[in-house]
Length: 213
Image 1: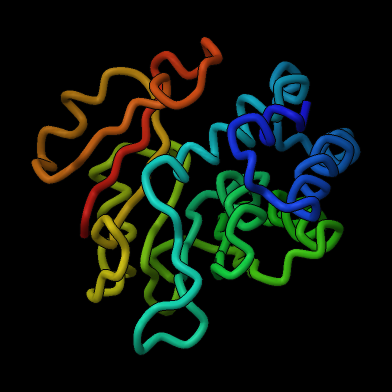
Image 2: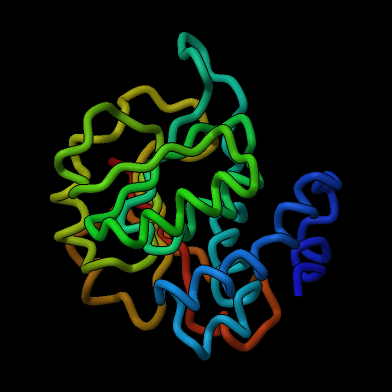
């Protein structure tokens, strides 16, 4: 239920609360046509998808304006699938520009429909691979689309040099399980445990990895 978002983020506006509440109906409707969320997970949409996406908020809050930068913070969501974590983050940060990328066109059809229904003016989408995206971003977000080594190779040249947040520009990666081996090549990676943020058992092994680039 969408109330769980308000419990963890009590300062959201009525408009944001309304947009979060709309998500369940929109995804149920679209999921019946194009399967972007598993049947099991659609009943746990707010915990396993929306709240999980918002785990990134526990690591950084995107700034509305940046020095020498028209339009504020820019974020690319790679392998967005049905729009996660990009859409929940776009609701939470309406002044931040989000560019949602996926190589599967039918998934972006769902994303575009949800974005339009919610009236999100801070979201653009692109069908294709991350390596081909033009422009640079303050942060690259994603939910475990591949191992970190491959992900870094896709996105290394997409990050702006100038950092204006409390953490350095780079990757914010939502992933679960033991990441010891996978992150060995990345000595500068910081791991944030989401079970310290959210109480649901789903988050017991879930993490946000921040890798400055």
